[in-house]
Length: 86
Image 1: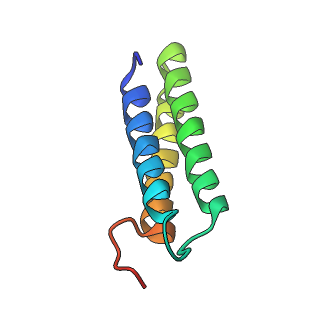
Image 2: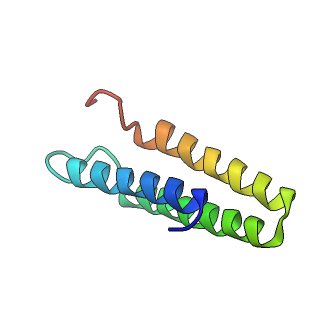
């Protein structure tokens, strides 16, 4: 846990874990593959961000930020963490 990318992606991943555990009780609202997509998005975002710091590359930073935002958007629209229980 050395970079901002580490902290941010681990925080999002921890939120995914809590959401998964909360929703594993009761009627299934979503699919396991959706959590896998979000977790892989966090991992790749972290990798790109850390490589951007090593290489001092603006392009890698941009890729990490775009993928991170895409991962958050996927979580927001596919998993609906703050949505009502349909």
